[in-house]
Amino acid sequence: MPLAVTHVISTVVLVDLYRDYITRHKHYFSLGTVFLAGLAGLLPDIDIPLGWVLKLFGLSLQHGGYTHTLAFSLLFLIPGLVLWQRKKHKPAVAFFVVSFGIFLHILLDYALGGGAYEGVMWLWPISTQAFKLHLLRRLSINNIPNALDAIILLAWLYHEEAAHKIRDYI
Image (cartoon, rainbow, N blue to C red; front, top):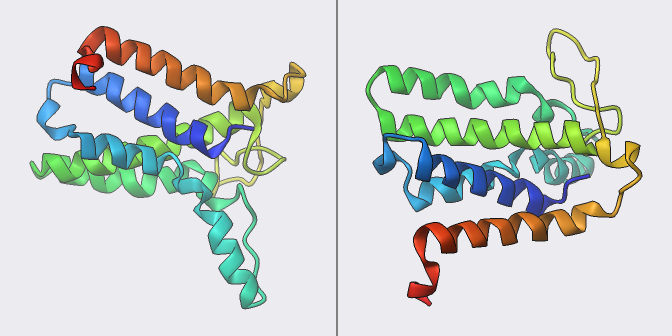
């Protein structure tokens, strides 16, 4: 299963690469926006601390449930689209990166194994059927999550050095 760091760093890296190579609106993608994307990459796991709090009141919240659905991602995408249409681009981009971070988290859990063991409820609230690939279990490489963080980080640092000469700032 992807570790928390994997969710954060993969979102940061992808949003930063989008910012560097694709977007025409670089002023909407500040470093703060990239940081927000990283936080959003962890947002579906808010069900863990919420579950702890609810347990104090005799209630429960399953990890990998509602916060690991496309509907949760749409809660941020739809306001972003409305704001973009109203020409409020900077706040719209904030909603877009949050929605993307949530979606990427869910995609990583689906592909690599995480969240609920049963998988991801892609179609919730229409259906509660869960889907999973859980490639790490299928390929019997359960120990790769620890290395995955290092691989992503080193690849990104290499890119940053090659593209932006970060050693000039050290």
